[in-house]
Length: 271
Length: 263
Image (cartoon, rainbow over all chains, first blue to last red; front, side, top):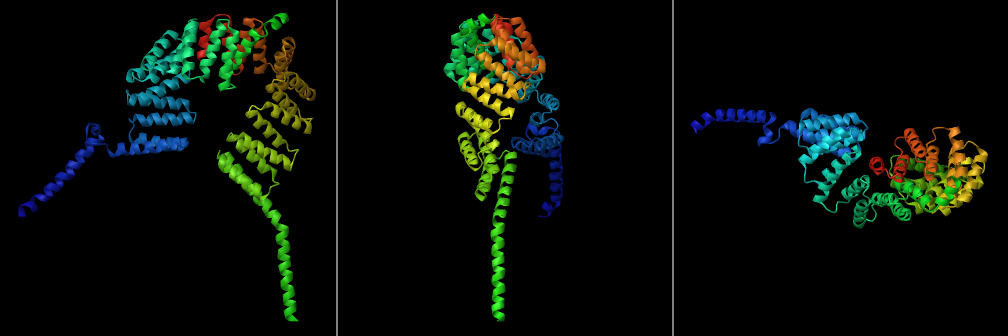
């Protein structure tokens, strides 16, 4: 008994010292290697979660404060940067949003959500060059995700690089042969190459998968117009307008095709 | 005697109170109806449309003759896409006051949202008959007739609007559209020219002029006009679509798809 009471203070001192060491290790980033998150990381996560809740309730200004607080606790917390960018975007602070996304990818080079949002932000600004680079990073991280290939393809298409876009759509279609968005976009590539037969084949496939896909019906109308099949074009535009009566591309296409098909003689008399 | 006098005073006081209640009751109800309508409007502004309808119903319950609450209710129903419900509400409002402009306007919107352009045109005609000096009523009637496909009658309505204001661009533009649909492009072109003299940046007229050139195969002129319309409003997709169509007509598919894919 006497010997136990003699060593008790040493046990207590040891425990306190051990705890302090553990805390120091955790805060210096050792948490990831198995020591569990530090209180700062916990606080950062808590504030991020709170911000995400506020953001989904549409309270973007309040959410932004939470994300800022989260990042003050842990400035390398990539998810908080991504969420912060979302709130900045909702508040129409596009430059700040893009800057947050840059920080997110600096904090975590393998954060697919950050690269995806960055590609979108750059594309929205019309900076397709850098958007394409961001999308390339995205597909490198998440190559099995068809949506990533579609995104990259769309950026290439917006950039005017149709061969690169087609290659990306092919990757997406390899993953899912019934991926209608990629099939539709691939059809636009075929139209670009003046291969209206292939375009029509792809668009018919999309419309078999989803008869209400108004973009596909409209593109089919344009392909038929290119072949001089104005009657069929009007029918395709009408099909798109059944889904959305105010769909501008179909309205414009139908007006032109109808003039050519029905009113050509009338207009010739005038000219 | 004292007791009798006391009783007399008591009944006099009771009678006065009763009289006051009878006199003030409708006033109180009216104020309550106004209050509930105000609560409904606040809920509507906060986009809580279902809540706003509940408040408007309370207001109508308090004062069935309070037409504003009915009109506000109809608008909230439209926001919830309950167009048939809103039609019933506007009809009930018109039973209270058949000359109420907002009720007729709401009715036009609701029928139009249901693609029932014949009823919408009927409602627009009623509104125009109530206020024939208001050019907007002629325009609304013309627009509904045009949507119904009755271009000839629409033309007459637009002429009614331009009789009131010869420089009424919206009515002139719609008149040009009717003329195009009736196969009178030369007259349509003249009217579009007239609009562009009033306002050279009127994008609808610029785009419309481009369409006339496109229909005649004058692709260079058409492209220039679509480009001008896009410059006036870069976010407007219609001239871009028309530009793509023009390029397809010329078999310039690569250029067409570069524009079309970015719309």
